[in-house]
Length: 201
Image (tube, rainbow, N blue to C red; front, side):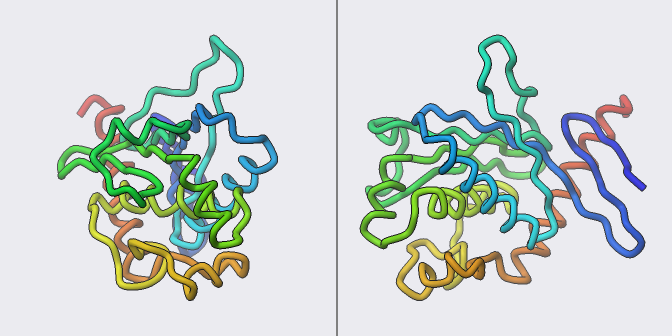
């Protein structure tokens, strides 16, 4: 049974579990090549799927046909070209930024510095699309958990050292169990808010 919500939110209910689905609007200002971008989307979707959240993507390709308005259940990911990082107060090695909001507000914006991802991938030997997918998933993790803190290991580690990078090609650099549970709880709150407001309550 599918339970539909507003703003791109869908709760996919099966026999024993429900999987939250949210919209991600992707803006490719960095002119990332289509194949690499598709790899990045696939990787980010796979990682979030492991945490119990299904991503539905909108890529704005045709002028005049914008993606849905961002909000609690419709997130925005913007891939920035070189120089855009100067607009944010972030460390020199930051690959992206997530603008979280304290409860009861819901942050919806992620920015990724594509040139830094490219350079980091070249240094570490990871492909551009693979690296970008993990960066997007990491920043979405900040957004969905509503916190900027990092973990000691795994996908949410502040800096990916060799042990973390070696897990990327195998598909095992993921959110840990506690992070996955937190994401599920916070996403459920987003979907509940969307449903309440769409019902006029």
